[in-house]
Image (cartoon, rainbow, N blue to C red; front, side):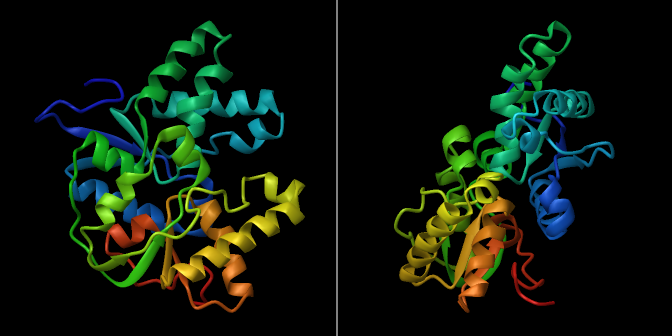
Length: 261
């Protein structure tokens, strides 16, 4: 296997799914949708039992010791696998971009962190860039717009991959909203520390979503989606909010994010 690149042709693709805390607690259907997409693409999917937080909240809050402890645990848990797939650009970015720097001064962990970083991928990037997937078998009747999350776009260059796969979903009409690449105001601790600024940012995002004419908002990071779904719900909007994996997997039976069950 080429680290970070194409898997060898004919070789079994044994990948680990890094579920993420938000998916586990708030929207497990995203994890099941990711599993379906990976299995449909020919992967053997493993969910390591001992996975936990990637350490990003502690890292962003200046808790370096706690972040390092969590990073070591993630490295140890996931390093036996050919690839690690994450339905979140934020957590994938933490492992790919920040683990090597975080553990750079620890000889025992430096190379192991770099090795795991090279084999870690955001979900749609793995499907398109690594597996070479051109399309998916799914149906969704709706007009959708896509929000580019900061970490996925700026740390992992995830932009066209979800759009490429969405164009193959039967029934989907895509619309691009203005400022799709601008932050929604979530930013993890940012929305807590700077609530007023965060609210202004998500309010502008809501204006662009509504102006696009889309009836469904999609993204690849659950933190952004929860933030935007909350604002849309409070405004009485009829725009549905879903993780892109749910639409690509054809698993949209559950109510959209923020809707009552």
